[in-house]
Image (cartoon, rainbow, N blue to C red; front, side):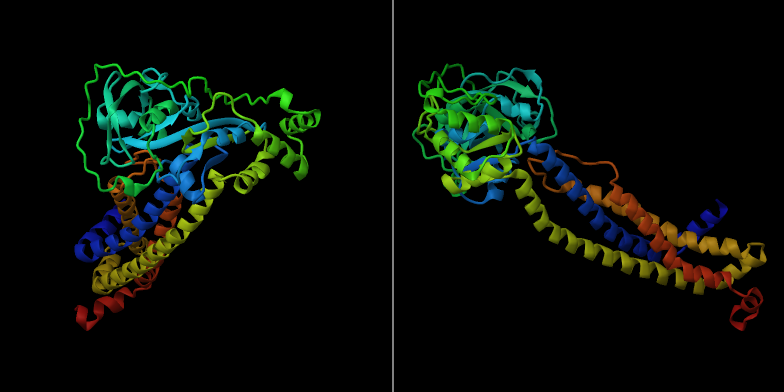
Length: 476
């Protein structure tokens, strides 16, 4: 402990040089720490938000954009698709569950999502207060939505067209908050859920192709908590009989023959079938009409969960080749996105490691100059009883203290910067999280750098001839 205190006092005796070395080291550490935080946080958040969704059906366009808009709710949708056509695909025996999504409006920047109650089940969401939405214009809001907007159960609000808090306000259609969801740490915390029929009622007769420019220049002020004592009744005869049964996919038996029944049974059993058999089966399926479905109803996307791994090979190709929709795999597209982001992360890593190497050289220069100026002091320490080994350890500790101080300063700095970075809707707000495994490994590298930077000055001090040093004329 005495040697440690002595090493620390020698460093603070020249505070300017020591602080410069520490800060330079901390900058490199903070950049690498930020990269580790962003990479870990983004991948963990994305994995939670995938919620087991195997495939997303949507309008033609960028598959990455389709995934970002429908799964992570972090981009604009590619457009709308016909509900009947989407359900004809979703009724395939290879599909275990399907969930429709209808987007287009927001409330104070939080997206209003028309869907079914099964959507919240993907994230194992529970109610914090109130109850789940049941009828048209009822809404269950996410936990963060309630926190940021002050919405409570029983409050009323109206949506704004688009995904920004400026645009055409649907002030004739008021939503009633039926419940608030408990926090899930997923994108669900930032969403407002309502029946699909609500979105259809709001946009009935409107072109709800989702184009950012349709509402970019609009500037309407609206009351955030409208008092709605009037009861709005809407006629939804077109959709009253339309129910999304996500577990049962039945066909009209009179439209099928024994061959098709056999093919279907083999598909449900997970057995392989030939391409010709699949084409025959799909052609017959697409001719079937979903009972009670309006041919003109549209949704933004359809989330699919597979019953069998065989669907991963057959369904995407069939959708992309034989329909006017596109199919995108969330896992595949997000892996591609991460591979593109990896180039940027690698470039930042190279810069950070270059800074660490330069800071290591700076620590070496600092300790070398300290040794040259304090060689007489070290000789006096030897005369007063300090052994060679203690002097050697003292200088090593100086390098390690600077490296450790730079590491801990960099880690704290990274978290301070993280708090002020803009948060994405699919990432939970985490201001201060535990140390990452990569940061602990970074500590080992930091200490090794400190040791390498101080090993030469420490060795020279170890080999110092006391008699020669004290008898030199310049030291007399």
